[in-house]
Length: 152
Image 1 (cartoon, rainbow, N blue to C red):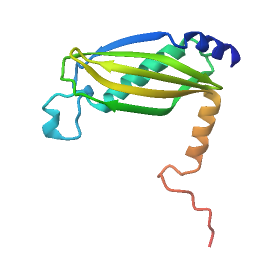
Image 2 (cartoon, helix red, strand yellow):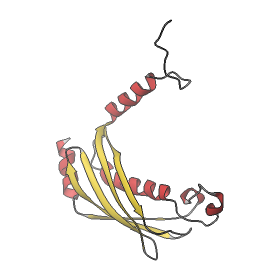
Image 3 (cartoon, rainbow, N blue to C red):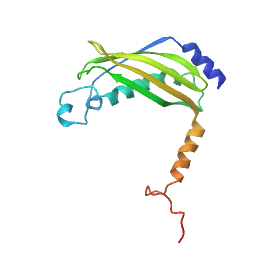
Image 4 (cartoon, rainbow, N blue to C red):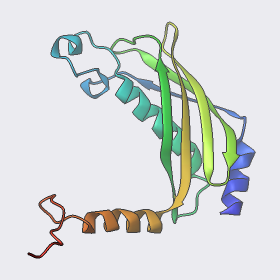
């Protein structure tokens, strides 16, 4: 993993820019049917785009047997963004500590700054991640109930 961390360290403090358009209903705030009609970008969709951007930077420097999982995510959603607006994400890697990669950034729409964020991604083995997920699945039966280990 040291080689990957060295590659990631080379990306530290470089600015990255991404953009996307609020182009369909999947981007809209939909918890309230009336507000859905307003056509506002949801915080959930914005975070998904931010997470995707951070992953895209790391995926090219990871080994095939590694993945970068989100372990921390924080956003200050400052302003609403209407349907059809373009959104611009500006961010950088601020720190690399052991297997953790720290990101910070800002998000703008066509008018103003709409958010600031911090994300931490941990670089982990795909094999171990899959093993841990399988262990959790094995701890319950297919009905979603905990196995009955008590025999009366």
